Image (cartoon, rainbow, N blue to C red; front, side, top):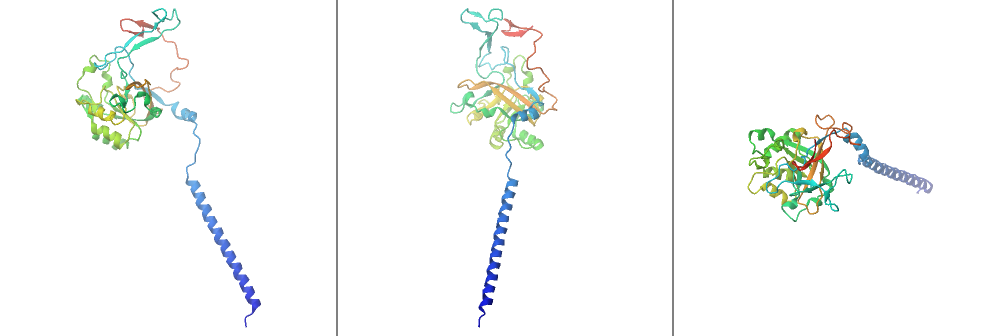
Length: 327
């Protein structure tokens, strides 16, 4: 005969054990979930507020700055198809006479520019293809980028018509690592050192860049744009390199200066250019921002910049040169 009292006790014990096991199971599950969440939080990137002033103080203030830009002047080298720029004193329309320090307390300059691609400049894709952006349509993200300098100066010294090849780029990458996506690549040839020599623009042999090299830089490494020291991209009769760039939405820089004073890697380039509406090109200012221990350039505080110092000689208009000079 079944002992009912004993059965009731056993059932209560079993129920209690079941509740305890369920409780422990739930607790263990919650513990696992909390562990996973805490682990996820620990591995997730922490978003911190970036203070750009601190970035400037820490990195930019002590950097070395090198100008990579030719000065625009009436005597500068210009492709014969454009002609030289003309400088003149700005005229007061009321008097018909030039503004002067004596009469109006200031002077201004009138510029007659034969084109928008004089001196150091950016070619906008619209120069060759109207369906692509003009100079005023380039995005503000062009402002600052990693800078790469690939030198072919030694080969150009032996052959003035040498063009950068894919092998040159791969050799650079073998030593320095892959070219970063979105960077600016300047090709050093030291051709800019001939800038002030007579007949610079009439030299029919000059360094350039082969089409395969351009395609590798843009399609494989996805750079922002490339720049070079001569006034043209290559020596082909059709300018095949420049044609490919412009018809595929790529800008480029031309007549860049002082690349012999820029490190091969590790620098940045600050880019400024004119914003003419519908312009097919723009006068540009390229400044390399180099590491503080770089042997070229100047740092903030090394030169007096505010207020700017008085010069030893005053600016005066030279009618023979057609420009203001200090003499």
